[in-house]
Structures are given as structure tokens and as C-alpha cells.
Amino acid sequence: MQSRSLLDESGRVVCESCEVAASMGARVRGLLGRKGVEPGHGMLIEKTGSIHTVFMAFPIDAVFLDRTMAVRRVVPELRPWRAAWKLGARSVLELRAGEAARVGLAEGSRLTWQDQTI
Image 1: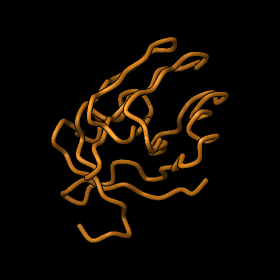
Image 2: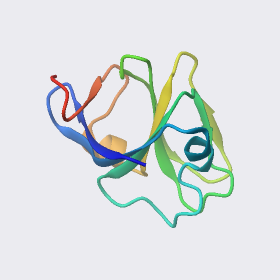
Image 3: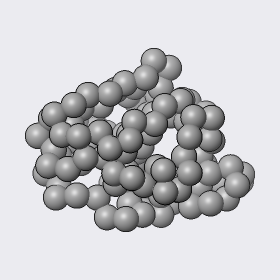
């Protein structure tokens, strides 16, 4: 799985080391089996508008993105054994619980990869 940095429209780093779950197996596995998410790390699950935290051992922030990488919904501190979704979302950024608020992510924010022009 590749890892890249995500920035918001002001150039602020939102996720310093973001794994991209692009394959079916990686999307199904997601963060399952991990003990937590390190500060500054996260996972972008592509081709989905919903996630679940069944069998997870820790809460996460779920950031739902549309096809232009605009934030459509932020679900803070989604606890284990829960589900979340957003109609129109095309991917979900999973972050350490509290990270979305810490970096100022809100509906309408637009994200881009560090190596792309903002």
C-alpha cells in the first residue's frame, strides 16, 4: 500500500502519512487488526461512501470525501461497532480520533495530495 501526504486548500498538512487502500482486499481490511492510528497517520479508503468499525479496538475520525476530494461529512470519534456513511461520498479518510478537529477539517474543506498543485 502506498503512503502519501494530504493537504488542505491552505497548504496545511492534514495527514502526513496517508495509506491509500485502493484494492478490494485493502478496502475490506482497512484499519482492522491494528491497535490504533499514530498521530499524523491515516488511511484513505477509495471507492466507498460508507464504513464500519466492527471488530476495531479504537475510535477513529471518519472524513467523507466526494470525487473532487471536498469534505462532505466529518464523523468525529466513531467508536468500535458503529457504521457511518454519506450519500455522494466517493472515499473515506480514516484518522486518529480527534485529528480532524485538530487540523481544522470541516464540511467544504478541499484536500489534495502533496505532490499535486493546489
